[in-house]
Length: 142
Image (cartoon, helix red, strand yellow):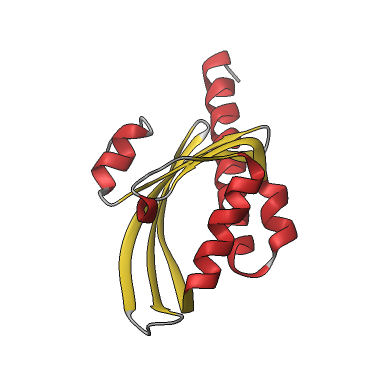
């Protein structure tokens, strides 16, 4: 095996690990607070679209965003529609639908999450409404 193909294999392996960390984040979000906490890097920065991308930092900040979402919405459905990974970055397209817990108002939105993984944990999340913007921000333009 040449060095170049070894580098490519190593890069693909890192992308697979990165994508798996992000899948674990989605799996834990709805159902498992402890697993969710464990997938967050201590230095996480999260920029949720519903808060006008105001940053939240640290594990407790990430847990607060999760709690706020779960407290605000019922009948949540999250469909993962696509993953694009490169290095430590992943863009995930997700279709989210839910109903306001108090108001009953439905929400139906497609988000393009830009994740960055460090040390096997999610360290960065920015929620984009535009897929091309998310891919460009992640350096993954198609």
